[in-house]
Length: 362
Image 1: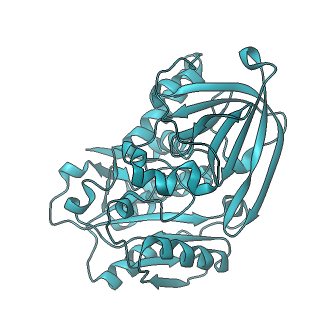
Image 2: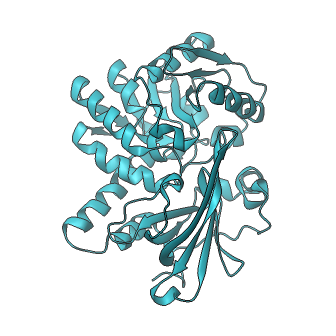
């Protein structure tokens, strides 16, 4: 058990932006909203799943949509609590705890807002262990759990309750609705019990994101290499360093699609890394050979301060370090790779599990 205060949110947001693997939404907006809510209502208690009573009902909440929209269409602030209340009414079960639907980007801090406003505790975990572009890419769905009904809300006051037959249909319908709602929507999932969640979530990821963000901050303050601090905290591998020389990104269908080319510097001089993304970074290749593939994490950090770089913030001339990190072990199963592996996104590269530390680390 631990508490998150307004002073803790910056570290949490920074770490969540790294775990977002390029996606998860603008973390700064979520940081500001969470800081305001915690300053007004007080700290939020974060509990490990083992500390949650068996009779509890946990509602996960997150934002879905095109990342670039977050810079133009701000949340009103009440969407999260409205979504939680709507899905609870539809399911006929009052929530006792909340949790992030994903730990990446804005979605690590957004649940702090309804938690602070309602006085509910937050469960230390999420449904992904990172960020993924599709709602069907959830550990509960992988475990065969139904997450229906879903509730979607927007800043205009619209509320939609969706009874999807499975999460593939949930993704298709909710994606269209999020586009109609202006490109983004808040989603709340049906309440689940601790027993259902035990084998269907990534455990301890709120604390992990906060510790990761803190490690980067302390390295900066101590004038140590913050990229190395991030790599260690991730148990990851630094696979490439260089300068961004080309970015091609385009929004469509509720996603940001594209690729970036990084020209190598230092030991990587004379080579190029190509990073492909669909909201999140999904494939990193050098000379046609895959260095890191989804579902493992591809984390692009500014080389000087290890500031995480979302896919929508890539720009020419940015000097970056690319760190790969292992995903939650459940995604490496045959069933997990079927819905989150390279083949699902149309990439002709087999998945090779990233090991850490490895020979590519430097």
